[in-house]
Image (tube, rainbow, N blue to C red; front, side, top):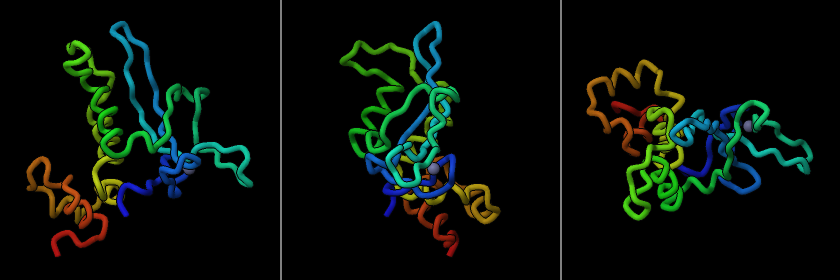
Length: 158
Ligand SMILES: [Zn+2]
């Protein structure tokens, strides 16, 4: 099932949105104009009481000074939060600078948590077959769930 399991950006094993499993970490820089978020990673949460605790969370020592449970980024509520980082919207006066430092990186992360089969297809984006079949596609066709599912299944062009 899409949007239920991800590949941990540190250990490469499956991570879920269970509150004792998935964590999103990123760097927040304070700038003159406010805050800038970047370098988003999906990782295993460190649970000391586990028989074999996983140590995937790089933590503040590595500069990842922001984190939230992975499940907060999912579904309609997750999208609402993610969009507020791009625009604070009409009820808060608008006009604010986006909190996002790098748009391509942020959208990649948003697709990972919002677009079905993006995560499953993501590791095959560099494959020659993917480029062969999608080289002439329009801007969004490669990111449609149906297309992503074909990339993930290796059935692109069948
Ligand atoms: Zn991990």
